[in-house]
Length: 353
Image: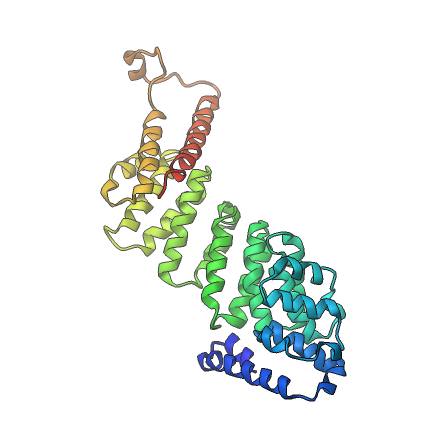
């Protein structure tokens, strides 16, 4: 009940959780050693450990009286004591769905944490188990928080969206909601999930659930990442969102004009985009954006630079309209521009403090 209170945002429950865990530990120590022959009681020790219980308390209990799978007991103890390699070895073959739901859900959550970095697909599978075995509890809340980052890294947008909406429906007021949104942001911006123009509206709908300031920062990250990777349509869409969220004459507003202007100039609104770029107040851009901004402006200017050897007179004359336009030269120019932007991003990234 205390953990359920934490999941629903009850700060008092969060404060009483440590005291309750301490009381349970004291009762364990005071219990008749014979009680541990009951499998349910021995499993309760494992659940106690995985719920934040003290390993030093468990080590004082009569181990020879415990009636519980050795792998579960030793794995749980290794996990809470920080011996992750040993915990993985002990718990890797345990199937959570073969256990009681209370124990199985806790074990599945721990497996998800243990295998997140070494075997992400298994971690996702175990976190799914945790959610299914203990729905509506702090275990499901924690599983959603952990899984959102993994599915983002796996580029699974459908599941990323599903997990986000599930968290919003049940746990948006959780004590740990801030951690969820941090993982959400990382999963979204360190992948290609937000770079597909066709799903931008769905991304925007998810971001509407976040506070205005965080939403603005995320759109800026998306706009920059999209521009560097050549997704000009998304660059423009994200830039326009920033324009609606940022204050007049702010640094964020100038960055928004930078991104939108670049997308316009390098796509299908050359004159308007170049004018927008030239109007940007460079002094308000962050230092890390300046090399990128300068390179972008130069690339935009180069788009209409006369070809080598072409006379000024020739460029002044209106071109003969061909029967069919050959866009090969323009396409090649855009490809080179996008390549140079990516290379510049890597160059400046290596030199950031």
